[in-house]
Image (cartoon, rainbow, N blue to C red; front, side):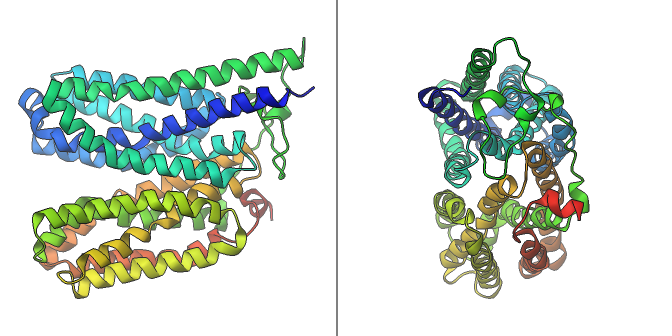
Length: 428
């Protein structure tokens, strides 16, 4: 027995709202601190070392989440895990806002980033779970919200912190996380009620976690089922060329993005660009990510567009990086714009993860591997970029390092975008 269409639509609407609200929390906690660090220092006294540790935490703990999330997915349903990640995120934000200890501040920040890392990983398979035939559309909504959660919180926190204090400002960002957790709870409860109504006296079938290639399974009945109830669907992603292809794509684009977040304003200032224009350059780089979230995911759903999109990304990266090497002080915003369009591969990856996985379990394992490897490699990006700048006394060598990362990733990206399921390639 299958639920009436209105009931299914209601649950999918709830799931869509939960996914979007979750995305709102996956970048904000990482970008909300740096604009008010001077205010925080007045009460918590974060020294330079502690600030450096906190600055290195996001990518490292996002990578660490890649190790623990597959274990959690085997014991919890995807909605339950997403909700738990939001509860931990909210709790960590409240703890961080209430402490006077630098160590407690650092530990609570680490807890937040680890929970966000889990949320990052479960998002693509959760989209596959609820919207198997609309992966591109839902990934667009998810990507746009990710971009907004990168750009909006730094502005919001500065205004609120000066009005009511940094503690209330930081703690207030726990509200959307609590709301996301609440929505996931409603999704789980309605799914369980639906299952009991449609299958009275029967235990949920293990196959409820499975999904056909056509996306024809009953979303409503499986959404509250733990992967622990499903048959073993373990996938050795690290043994597949396609898995490594997508992971290296993730590593290359993340390396460039995090290096630019850390160093682009300084690079532009050294090229003679005034402070206001340098800040605008970083804002432009960030804003283009939101635009890409609108355009790229629906296009990625079609196999015929993958290689052309990959070519556009490579050209944009090359034009932006070479332009900043050769003539950073002239047409600088053009180079920044080209560079900002390069990470369209991130939006591609968010769509490829669910599309290249046969089941939700495989999607979870692929997502954990891709993001774990990608963020682990990217964690060294800002440090190596700065080190090469110090060693060379200029920006040409560090920019050449980023260009080399893009070039090395290209053959892997070609493999990662080929058709077929990652699980199938593992069985060949």
